[in-house]
Length: 125
Image 1: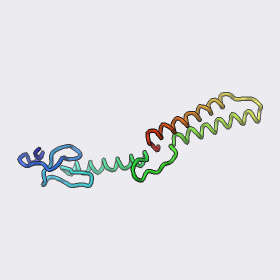
Image 2 (image 1 turned 30 degrees about the vertical axis):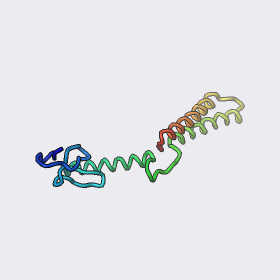
Image 3 (image 1 turned 180 degrees about the vertical axis):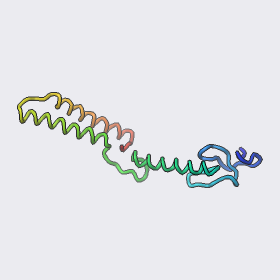
Image 4 (image 1 turned 90 degrees about the vertical axis):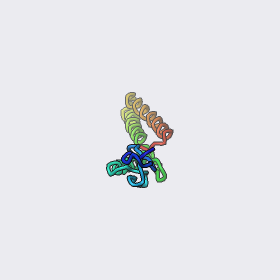
């Protein structure tokens, strides 16, 4: 493969951003790989930042902190709120409010399902 800019010179690598062949004089050596121009160098830096932020969001990588996924916490809170209101209605008034109890039960099921799914996908969001 030849350099994209210098057609008579053999390429020593490939630009990580655009995939063009790069010779020694054109190559910009970065920790993430080679770049062929300032534009590609900037793009590679931005892609690295995006990847690092995604790792933090999804809890992936060496420094991943394992915590309960937010969706599971939300459904669990709804389950406690609506289920608790349903039980309170029964204890205070003596009447069963089926909507609150069924909706609280549905939220509890969704809490368990989302927790298992997030654990299976190894996500933390």
